[in-house]
Length: 368
Ligand SMILES: Nc1ncnc2c1ncn2[C@@H]1O[C@H](COP(=O)(O)OP(=O)(O)OP(=O)(O)O)[C@@H](O)[C@H]1O
Ligand SMILES: CC(=O)N[C@H]1[C@@H]2OC[C@@H](O2)[C@@H](O)[C@@H]1O[C@H](C)C(=O)O
Image (cartoon, rainbow, N blue to C red; front, side):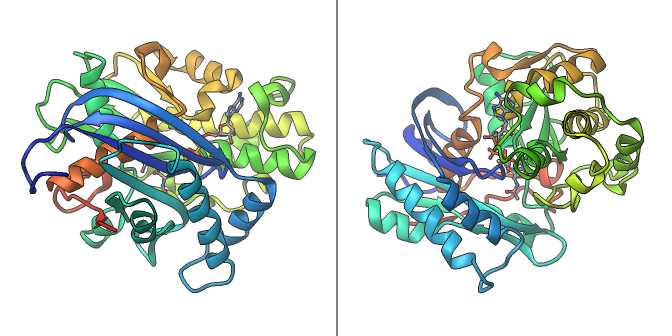
């Protein structure tokens, strides 16, 4: 059992994340008191079938009550129940769910995945709906991994400021100064979404080749970046907006349309170049040059993308594995960690991570 709010207790928490690239659900256990990480535990993955992915894709951009949302919710719910039922000895679950739509300045944010039903099915308390409270207080509701990145920086013993870059469907960057005691202190963190990352590359591969992604950047490696298309893309006002800022998966509209005139290889190279260029633009916001850039998410496995970052940045660019972390599971681990923070009444976002008016602990707790 968890202790009352505020008191420190070390537990095994499980986090589950269904990311914007729509590949599947990740689950990971973290041993934590919501402040420090004491260790990492078992991990699991439940891939979506092509049919399930099609249901999710059809529901993207949709809001509660709209066509296709219930079907997507069913897919997400059963994948979570199936995956998490295989874990034992879990004190609390952090369920992010699947984002279908994200419009922090408009209709809000929409994740499917019912924490109440999951708590009932598994008999374990579930923390969920992590983003709504932040948006209600004027925040972007994303990214939320930064407070976990702060704990990771301390876990790896970092003494200098460093950056974490998540290259999922969308990219997000966190600058961490580990000399601060708490993540919500002004100056400890700066975070925001950099731009589209793998999602447009995946969309191109699906449309042109019937494949899910550009494995190892093999297609992009055969092409050249079309500078004109890249410049047009970088003209988007999003890049000159000051952080914090966040993005919907399809916020840039039809990215594949931007490279319609190009052959397959040049189109893949150009979309990969757009992802790298948005990260470079994002890095300009760092208050001091970071000592290293640790890359997490599937994009770290794309050597073409990693090389584009390496040649343009002055600091080492490495996968998070270089620091002993698991780049396939960092986001799932983040929601395990954040769940424990919510149970303790600790904040999960602050003005410099989401633009929220004050540090806030977002998330609903369902006890089954
Ligand atoms: N070997 C590889 N070569 C190229 N790209 C890869 C490779 N492995 C993974 N990827 C890319 O990474 C994507 C998956 O990344 P990840 O699982 O981090 O996304 P996500 O968690 O769904 O997204 P987000 O963080 O935006 O929610 C794949 O869809 C693919 O585009
Ligand atoms: C609204 C939403 O689901 N955003 C995701 C998405 O995927 C990456 C990026 O865009 C980030 O902002 C966020 O996820 C991570 C886990 C976060 O909140 O830190």
